[in-house]
Image (cartoon, rainbow, N blue to C red; front, side):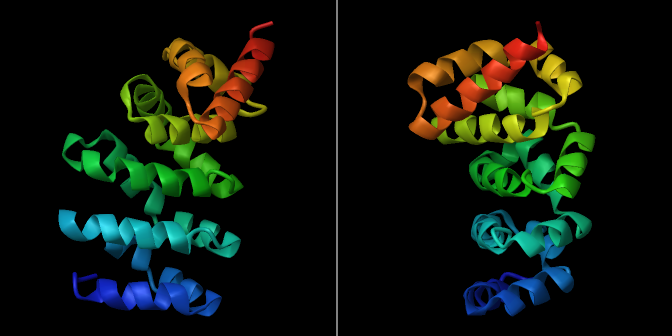
Length: 180
């Protein structure tokens, strides 16, 4: 998808649910992520709006959005886009298909790293994604504990936003129960 197509994407995003579905079905996700750095930020904002619609989450996963977003998390040249990538992953993590792909893409180390050193909003989103991925999964809970998630989660319970505090507290509680 070329830069000039972004305006069309923006217009279609606000048009209707049918437009959302048309964009995903035609593979807009994978093309948008391949834009130049300037266009990526706007495109990712558009994508986060696109994926709020529940029906598009599975389509987004099948279109290959997760590996592109995970690459942004680990690519130091994409640091300005981490916020949007985390926002999109946070929305997608409520979908069972997306959860499996997110975990398979080995995101746990990157998410724990963001918990440890990221900006406040990014830390909050990382905690939300980890909570979604690790609920009812002791293996993943043990993995994030070994990766060093406990201390930054404790810090988030004290110094985070209300949402960040809730997510961190919930994740610490299920971690505690898993270790008993």
